[in-house]
Amino acid sequence: MESFYSFPSAVNEVEYCSGTACFVARELDPKRFSMATKQQSRTYCLGKCYEAPSSSEGKSIPRIEARTGTPIVLDNISSGPVTSLGMYRKRNGFKALQKALEMKPAEVVDEIDRSQLRGRGGAGFPTGKKWASVLSQDSSEKYIVVNADEGDPGAYIDRMIMEMDPFKLLEGGMIAGYATGAKNGYIYIRREYPKAIESISGAIKEMQEAGYLGSGIMGSEFSFSFRVVPGRGSYVCGEETSLLRSIEGRRPEVGLRPPYPTEKGLFGKPTVVNNVETLANVPWIINHGAARFSEIGFSKSRGTKAISLNSLFRNPGLYEVEMGTTLEEIVIGIGGGLRSGKLKGIIVGGPIAGIIHPSKFATRMGYEEMKAAGGELGHGGIVAFDESTSIRDLIAHVSSFVAYESCGKCTPCRLGSRAVENIFSGSNKGKQWTRNDYEILSDTLLETSLCGLGGGLGEFLKSASMNYPKEVDACFA
Ligand SMILES: Cc1cc2nc3c(=O)[nH]c(=O)nc-3n(C[C@H](O)[C@H](O)[C@H](O)COP(=O)(O)O)c2cc1C
Ligand code: SF4
Image (tube, rainbow, N blue to C red):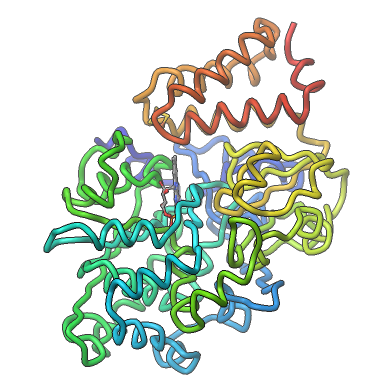
């Protein structure tokens, strides 16, 4: 099983990041980026994309701003970190849990359902529906699993929530537990985020000591506990079935669904798997009501979204915006455009989510709308790149990432990603391929991959050829 993980079999003393934000910023500090390529085990990513190319030595924190009239996720963080339980309570902390405990579990689920909150981890599944499914299962043992793997290079949203507002996430997770009948929560945090592991573990300890965890919480009959599980350096472990196997200590290959984790999840029991940002919305919704939340946003994407901008922007940082904000407003209005060079495109929601050409910046940020533009909202990390990165370079980088992270279960993902990497980074530079071969592999990846890693490479290749047809054509004989 050690072979599955890149950690702890090979530990780098100082880690240099190979993520997409670091790759597109390689010319800002070629020496530093070259260190990443020389490491025995690769690191994708350290969540420091605002100072890319980055290493584990970088200690700065990003600019953090709520750019919406109704901050929800970054409301606390934008006025400074919450460093103790006392400080969190002064900022209305645990009022939502108190309120939820006075409601029936089904009423809490209904409130979340009516808010139209959708999962912020990428797939956009309605959170209320997921909770309702777990609540309806007849089982005395159920689990809440917080997906804090934040594997998409380019995103550092969950990292900052965990480091700077840990109690908010824990409160959201506890409300999920009360609403669905789960008494135990697991928080799976990527090992590339040691400070987040420390901050969440410290917050749990403080809550245990103050009686906010354990039995009879806040004078009620509700009991709950949390356990932190550090990841071990595998992108695929962010996929929910793989993540559950990793917590169970099994080889974390992706599993077939159905059954879904809501029916048969952790240790075979009904399980809610939710992303960090998803749960960070929950206390606000309970405090202010579903109606107020669903008034914010647009189309089928309600509420706000935290977005992270990489170092090539004039104003890199973490921002909260209302769903429906245009990419133009984000890239130019908030990000300030590039600090130098000509903007060639952006990658939103992780390297395999697709490339968006500046001609499509009128697109409004929403799950369906981003897909129609040939991308994905994904987790909301935005990586802008300039003309120093060719589309060929980008295809080589992304396919290399997929080849490195593939769990190997599906042949097109295992072999196809390697083939694309060899062709686009090798000396033959794709000349042995025709456009037809490229299209066939993209379709095969999309149609036959068990999970979003292989499928995502297919989508990425398609989006590259849709948005940059001339450059992709030039790669073939
Ligand atoms: C390859 C792959 C990697 C993923 N990585 C993450 C991740 O790092 N964090 C995350 O929250 N979701 C990730 N997901 C999505 C999860 O499978 C799952 O949909 C999510 O945790 C559900 O939470 P949500 O409904 O709150 O978004 C990944 C999915 C795939 C296919
Ligand atoms: S698509 Fe790739 S990462 Fe996903 S299950 Fe198949 S081989 Fe594994």
